[in-house]
Length: 362
Image (tube, rainbow, N blue to C red):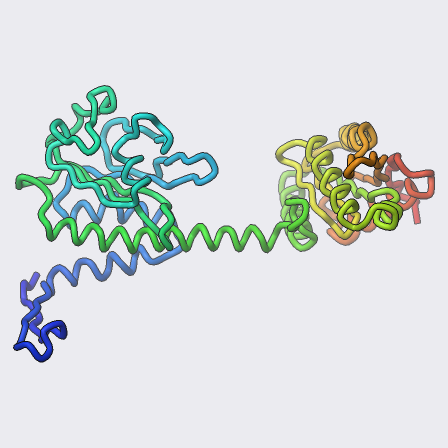
C-alpha cells in the first residue's frame, strides 16, 4: 500500500506565514471503508468491525464491544475476539467502579500504559479475574457517545510490537469511537421509532395496524404447521358513563388499568392489542377453544375484581368478551369480525361476561 502524503496549506496559519499539514493517504484508505461499514443500522456488522478490523488496523490483539442498557445502567457484551471468558455484564453502579464503568461515567477515553500501576482509579487484582489472558499491560477504554449520551464502550488491549498505544493510535481510536457511537445511537433511535409506530401510546400494547400484521403472521404459521389460533375481542363496559361523570382522564386511567389486567391474564407468546378506543384484541397462537375460554373467563374475573381509584372515588369496571377458534382458511378480517359478533352477544347479555362465536351466528 502506498505511503504517499497529501500536502496542503493550513488555514490556521493564514496571514502568519505558510503552514503545512499532511495526511497519511494509506491510513485514510484503510479508515474510510471502515467508516462506511460502521455507518449502518446493523449492530452485528458494527460489532464485527469493532472486534476484527479496528484491532487489525491498530495492531492490537484483543477487543470487546459492550452496549449500554439505560434501564438498569448495565453494559452488555455484544461481541469480542477474546479466546477466553470475559465479563458478559458490567454494572455502572459497581463500587468501586471498574475502569470501563468509570470511562462511561466521565465520558472520556482512558488510556492505560500499565494496568498494575494505574491509579486513576487504581485497579485491584480482585477486579481483574482474567488478567492472565493478556500478554501486555496496556489497554484503551473508549466510551461510545451519541449526542453526549453513552451508548456503549469499546475496549482494546494488548498492543503488539511496541511499548503501547501511540498518540496517533489514540487519536484514531477516538475518531472511530465517535463513528461507532453515532451509529449505535442511530440504531437505538430507529428501533424506538419503529416501536412507537407499532405501539399504542396510552397502554403500551400493540396498535390496530400491528395487530393485523401479527395476526397475518400467526395465520401463515398455523397454515404451515397445521395449528389453530384463538382470538379474543374485548370491550370496556360503560366507559362513556365514566367519561361523563369523572372526566376523560379518569376514562384513560380505566383503559390503562384494564390493559394491564389483560396482560396479566395471558402468556408471553400471546399478543394483546388496543384495537380501538375502548376495544382490545388478544391473539392466542396454537390455542384450543377450551383453553381460550379459560383465558377469557380469567380476564373477565380479574378486571371486575378491583375498582379503579380516581382521586377519592372508586369506579367499578368490567369488560365484555367475545372469542372463537380459527384455522388457516380464515382471513384476518373474518376472524376479527366473528369474535366481534360474539362480543356483541356478550354486551347484549348484560355485560361483564364472555361469549363464544358459534358458526351459525349471524
